[in-house]
Length: 322
Image (tube, rainbow, N blue to C red; front, top):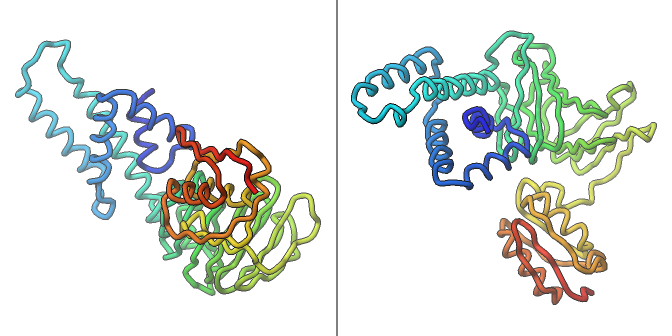
C-alpha cells in the first residue's frame, strides 16, 4: 500500500469505506505502521487552512529538511530518503489545499468540490450546515454561492440546515429527485431506486429528477420519490428515530427487534446477528440517549432473556426470544 496517498485520503475524509478499513488494518499490523499513522495524523492536525499558503509551507519543509540533513550520520543503507519525505509532505500540502479550496470556493467555476467527511458536521461557504452519514458524499460547483442557485448533488444520507436566502434557492439533486428550499432543516435518505425526505422545520419542494410536478412538504411530513412509482408520495412522519443515526438517541415503543437492530447497525457500524430469526419479531420498549453499543446490547439481552456474544465488531443474540 502506498501509505502516503492512502493516509492523505484518509485524513482528508475522501477515502472510501474499503480504503478506510484498509488503512486502519495497515496501521494496526505493525508498530512501525502505527508510528507512521500517528506522525501523519499530527502533521495533518497542525495544518491551519485559515492561514494556509502552499508555496510557503513547502519551502519551509524543504528548508528544514536541508538544515537537518548534514547533522545525521549513519550507514548509507539506513539514511532516510529525504526526497520521499519531502514528497510525502507535498502530497499532504496539496491535499490540504484541495480540501481548503472546497470549503472556501477556491478554484475556477469549472471545478467541483466534494465533501465526503462521514459523520461530521460541515459548514458550507454560504453558512448552510450538513451532517453526512457514513459513506455519504456531497458534490458542488466551487462557485455555487455566486450563482443564482446554490446547487449540490447528494449520494447517500444527510441532514441539512440551510442558511436562508430567498434570492438564491438551495437545490439538492439525487439520482431520483430534486429538492428545493430557501431556508429550512430536513433529512434526505437517497438509496438505489428511491429518495426519502423528512422535514424537521420549514418547508421543502420535492419533485422527481426528470419531472415537472412537485409536492410541498412541511414540518413533520415525509415525501418519497421512487423510480417505480409515477407519482410522489406524501405522508406524516411517524418515525421518531429518523435522526438516531446522527444524534445517538433512540426511542423504541413496541418496535420490532429487526428494526431496532437495523437502527443500531446504522449508528454504530456493527453487525448484530440473531441465532433464532424469530427474535426479530419480538417487540421492544426502551429509550437510549448516547449510550455505548456495548451497554445497549447488554441491556437488550437482559431484557429479552438472551445470551449475548461479542466478536470482532459483531454481536450475536442467542435464545428463545419472545
